[in-house]
Length: 207
Length: 207
Image (cartoon, rainbow over all chains, first blue to last red; front, side, top):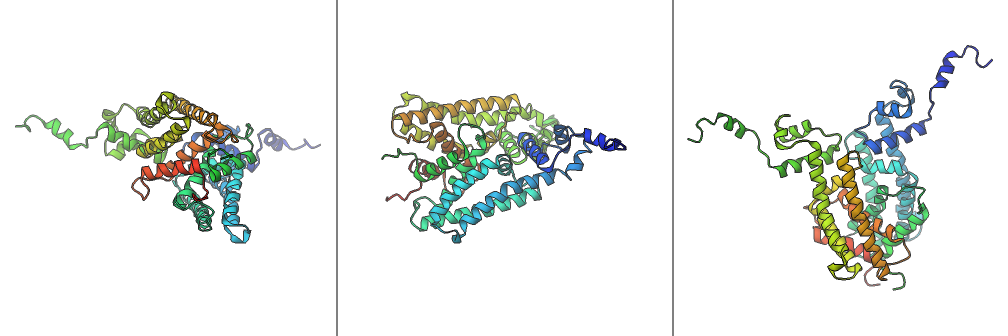
């Protein structure tokens, strides 16, 4: 009964069907592998086993996917930083900074492909410029939090706070270069190691 | 006299003439701005004010420039790491590790565009794969030096040495994301700040 008069539907059913999340995930993987500028909608269609015209049933265009990917990365990071930067969060600036370092590592691990893409954005289009602007706002809040912690006397004052902020989050962001989920180090262990190394340094613990 | 019978030479003299170093420098800038895969020899010719055929008088091809750029970045880093890793260098592993962190920062600053390009290489060609292989060899020597320093008891043993090595040099490499020469922080100050932050951590100095 269900088969009757459904010739077109049956043909459609024969095509691979993808939800938006899967299309986005596969697009991000391709962008990271080939570069955003080096990836065409045709490449994405091929990767998904769709025709060049069928891909447009799934997504309006390449830039739409880039924007969605960058939002995925930025939304998590913004939320973590906003909550840490707000002094209504309770706790000293030092405690809030430690929390946001750990949380950034966990977000980075949870959204690794999207964050990797974000960190490679150079501002070659309006979508990229908007993402860079959001990154800058995040970086400024983090630098402000570092300055607050220095003012509290909780962090060393002999290195410029902006330099501390850049090096600290540079270390966090460098995870995208080598960390792969499923390895021996899981996200909470990694987050603790990063925070401990940054705040305590490399000297043996019993000194 | 010199003008006689030199019609062709005069025409040539009218073209911009570039030495190899300048062509390489401009190529690296373009690769970093547009991506290597997104840059054609035509783009480079245009940037230099040369015709598409004239550019080939200066350089055999795009991959030749990439290889030269990656060698520039890798030669300095390899030399620094080889000398630090050799225990004939004198000094403890801890001292040699501190030296190589500082030296890496200075090389990175001195060869910033070439190192930036190196860190973006993903292995999309034989030239890129060879560069990744050299990077891996450098990373292994650095990790070995960290392990030696842990074994000496000079570095904390509660974090996996390979993880320490990745985070430490991840912080160093992250400089390429924001450091620009000519700013308020010069290379020796930066090298000291990175080493001090990594080895001593963020706690106030008077604790």
